[in-house]
Image (cartoon, rainbow, N blue to C red):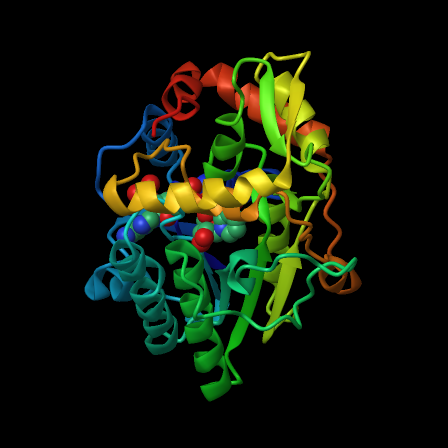
Length: 358
Ligand SMILES: NC(=O)c1ccc[n+]([C@@H]2O[C@H](COP(=O)([O-])OP(=O)(O)OC[C@H]3O[C@@H](n4cnc5c(N)ncnc54)[C@H](OP(=O)(O)O)[C@@H]3O)[C@@H](O)[C@H]2O)c1
């Protein structure tokens, strides 16, 4: 079997590659693994991963999702009938302009679909997101299911590009229903480096964390190891074709999550400052005005998305994937423990990512 992975250097990608490599070793399998990685200077953690990949004989195809020839060559394999393509590559970022995100998340997906098509790859597992559902303000006491239509007209750039990318996949799938495609929609991913954990970590002012309404709303999160297990589960040619699946490991209240994250950040006595929900609406407008004039830095706290989402009871229903036979198994504590280990091994990370700018 041949396994192709885009986004290999990212949070999902690195964990997926390591898991597949381990599977090859422990189960004496001979699956070929090929990664699409763009040439650029990245964090020490990224460089270390690339070094590990090279040392362990995993194949790298140096290329960019913004280049059609790169993607077409990357997806050319000797055994397309036994090949699975995991498309995890995207710009996951709430700060960059729409067009930058579009070129990779939408146009890049068009290229991946083209490579999948012309090179007759057997199966595509596409990593979408629960962001495709748009700005839901409450779940009406029930979780959001896959029946909720995706919202391609939403105005937030990242979310919109994920919806447009997913729409392309559905259009292709309708046109070629015989092609095997599974779409996975993870909720916020924790358990390692990444934007979801970073945003919450930035809300700590020492041991104080201001939360709308005291953080009593539920939030849906998934541990990266569960994402990896789900991807591997759906790489089976006979499972989940033509379907989309939400993916959640745990749904704590925001308050519970902050307490667990506090332990990771060496803050045992976290004090939640309960801010009335009404205060967050003005903050949303202020953040929009600031953003109109000041380009956000990667660690800006005045993010419209943050003020728009906090304090809202929107959680994601996981039952479809469970009924399909996939059971997430990570717990919040395990996930936070793994994040802590990551921070210990990468001391530069917290300093760089958890500081706050306007
Ligand atoms: N993290 C979450 O909470 C979350 C939740 C739901 C869905 N998702 C989705 O899950 C997928 C993976 O997310 P992640 O958290 O692993 O993100 P990540 O850590 O930011 O990784 C993104 C990956 O995509 C690669 N990439 C970006 N632009 C590229 C380009 N032009 N050409 C080639 N590669 C490119 C990055 O490579 P470089 O190292 O070169 O930058 C990196 O390997 C994305 O589709 C994201 O939308 C994430």
